[in-house]
Image (tube, rainbow, N blue to C red; front, side, top):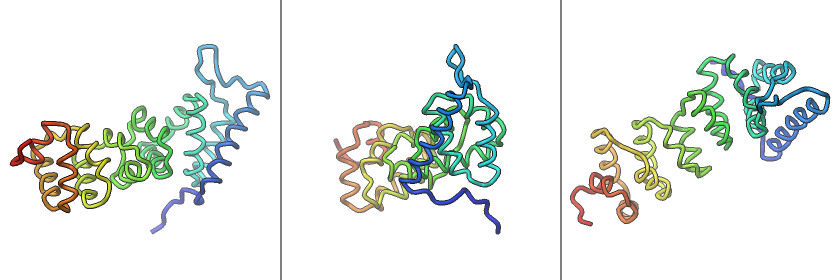
Length: 214
């Protein structure tokens, strides 16, 4: 099955080059007399900038576009990102959130989730939480997805992240609590004991360890 490419793999050095190049484009446009920011502070998007993003997007280089969008946000050109995304369907916006999360672009991913309603899948959320240590990403997951992340990772050495999720996010469905209790029961004894010692949310502690005294 044909899979649309997202562009070449870009290492750490390549990421830095991509960011600097797009920043240089913004600088050159400003120096050439383009008004990128109005008196009110809103950026006035030039056709040149949108054309750059559109061309890379339609050529299949979404990974490169994600770097450019992040630079635009960091530089304060929110309207540029908004106008580009206004032309995209929701599935494409979700894809950009996934790409930004997988490469550690937390600022862009957060903006896409909070401002553009992008959804996160479980593999992306796990990578952002476990690899990039952005455990607050779990706030944006549906309850069922947070349960899946917890249950999948209880047998690995990510206890600090998992206990943060238990202490700071809500699990209101009884089926969610049952699934988490079952996962804790099946986890290594050391993991279960560590969680028990570090669960500070009394309500969560009670339903995670209903027979334990504290």
